[in-house]
Length: 156
Image (cartoon, rainbow, N blue to C red):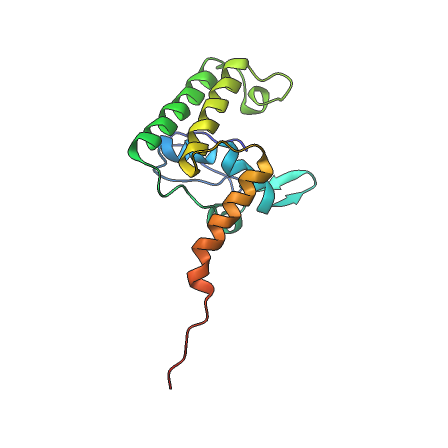
């Protein structure tokens, strides 16, 4: 899912999702394999295109709330490295940069480092697959919504 920073003067169409005042932390998490695995698991599609929904995908995504300041700094540094790698190809669009057959190796390496940094915010052991990431996120999601779904005892 293409994510980037836009100038304040950019006029967005109804096809874009905007996150005002986003930081490198936000960019890093949202462009990570963790968030993309969640998006692929819960979003809808039109033809083969993902239809990113703020209500379904973003609002239900479990951010790594327990990340330490050092972990956050690693994610931010890795996110900056992704942006720096992109900047080395000023004539390329995101579609060109992220073509699986043509992706520059430095950009791919930067994303791998970002994914490791984000994964470490969720747990110590690395994830072995996208399915394992999604299962972990659903367990966190269930734990977050459990207090909201418990029936309240009634007192008469």
